Length: 271
Image (cartoon, rainbow, N blue to C red; front, side, top):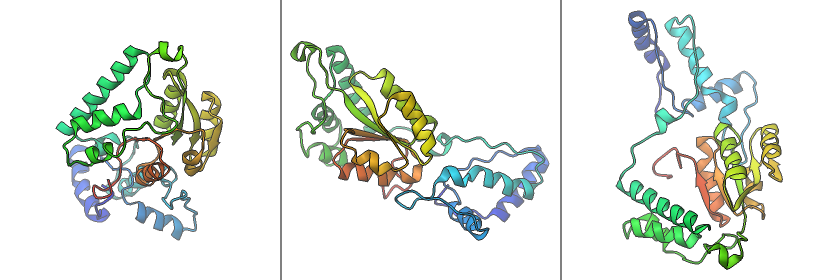
C-alpha cells in the first residue's frame, strides 16, 4: 500500500522461500506504492520526472509495476516476470448501508427522470441524498446548503413543457486513459442531454485523439483548463489516484458538480 513502508530486502527473502516451494510468486501492488523511492532512484540517475500542475508525480511515467517486477525478479531468482495493471484489487471495499441507500436513491431519481423523458436537476439529487443520509452526516449537510439548481444545470421538465428541447450539458473529463476515454465515449454517444466539451490528459496526444473521436472542442494537458472552461458545466475525474483529491477540490471551488473515480483520496483523513 502507498502508506506502508516496504522492506524490499526482507520481503524478497520471504518470497524467495515461496518461490523455491511453489515455483511462482504473485505480488499485488497498490498504485503509488514506493513512489518516493522510485522517483529518488530515477532522479539520482539524472532522469527527469514529470509532475502535474499540483506537483503530483505522473504515475504512468513512473511505472510502479515495472519497478517492483525488476526488483523482485532479481532478488528471488525469477526467470520470467509478467506485470498486469489493475487497481481494483487494492482499492475495492464493500459498500456499507449509507452507500447502498445513496445508490438506491440516485437510481430512483435516474429512472423517474428517464421515464419522464427529462434530466434530473441538482436540487432533485440533493434532496435524494439528504433523505437517505443521517441528519448530521457530511452528505446531509452538503445537500442542505442549497436546493436551487446550479447555473448551467438542466432542470427536470416533461418534454411537452419544453417542446422536446432539452438543454445539453457540457461535460469535462480529466484523464484520457482506458477508463477516462471510455467515459468520454459514453458521454459523447450514449447520454441524452449531454456532450463532451473538454478533455485533459498528461499525454496531450492522447487527449487530442479522444477529442477528435468524441467531438470535444478542448483537448489539453492542463486539468485546470477543463475545470475553468466556461463551456464545462460538470467534471468527471478519471486521472491517477494521487490527483483525485486536488482535482475534486478545484471543481468544488469553481462551483462545478464533479464525479470522481474511486478512490476519492488516498488517505481517509483527506477524503
